[in-house]
Image (cartoon, rainbow, N blue to C red; front, side, top):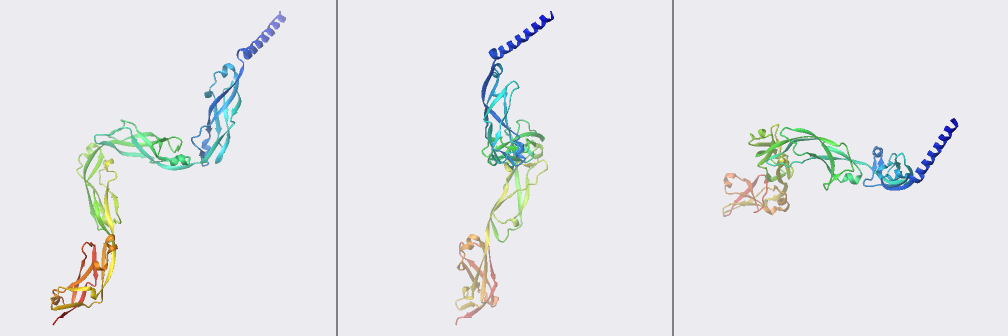
Amino acid sequence: MLKSNKINLLISIVAAIALWAYITTVVNPETETTIGNIPVELVNIDALNDRGFTINEGMTYLVDITVTGARSEVAKLTSADFRATADMTGYRKGENAVPVNVIKPNNIELVQVRPETILVAVVDLITVNKPVKLEFADEFTGGAEPGFISILPEEMEVSGVTAVVDSIDYIRAVVPEGVLAEEAKGFSLDVVAISKDGQPVYNVGLSQSQVQVTAALCATKIVPLKVDTLGEPNENIEVTDMHIPSYITIRGPKAAIEGIAEVEGRAVDLSEIANTMEIPIDPYLPQNVEVADASQNISVKIEVQGIVKREFEYTADMIEVANLSPALSGHVNTGSVTVTVLAPEAIAARLTQSDIKLFVDATDYRKAGNSIEMEVTAECGIEVKSIAIEPAKVRVTIIRED
């Protein structure tokens, strides 16, 4: 009986082995197949970043693999069942041949990877600061607009390949539609880099993924603006035109701006003007009121021209003794006279001595004695700022013609 049981057990084992061999070789034999275009993921790029390097963005790396396994298992395989990676730890600037590692299912054997290495360009990593700009999904109408806006941080670090980083214009955050209220609220907003042609750029690193924003929905109002001037321009310049806006647009809670009838701005000190310029207007506003978007760049526009000094020397015979009677003649005895003219640059450049005439009025020569104050005339069309004569009086000899 015992001997019979052993024989039966042996027969069962042999039958099982034969059945397994039949299934594996005939019903479900081992099969080899090739799966193509498996994307290669570059890992440990942070290790490059820590050393001031990064990879050349925009490249796609693909490999083909050959695997074996039971036909039933192999038939179900797709590229999604495999993960191909290339470890960037330790590589230097330039082109590097990086081995590809393939992670596979446990019941599949890897036969070959083609190519076994990929060429990866390692380049310098640059970092620059770019401003954060806030946009609103709402379209504001009816004299309303967002205000009391704060953004933290106002700038972010952008890092990556030089060509890509240089293309970045700013970092954008968008306030969702319908969330603003008259009372200021805070938001955490996702950010994205925006290129100079207005397109989102994702293949750069940002110092943080969100910004903290505070904003309120404000009413707006246009009111008269008053800006005074004080002081006098420097003697070396002359103000030729000055434009001060008559109105300013303000914003804030409706109750806060309703009672504002006029806004006064800080006075403009003309003594500080050195050239043609625009001076931002600094308005005095209540704490809960601010300048609206329409007047953000409001300024006083001042145009000036330079004043140039010209000096001319006149001898006595160049000074006319005028308004004498026909029976009298006169001449100046003073050796020379200096005339100093302050005139705009354009006029001073073409000014000549003949344009300025000196004379003494001898009408009341008896009353004046022999020292008479000089007078000056300029040719028609010659506009000067000032004329100074030194000395102001000259000695004149009057002779009666007998």
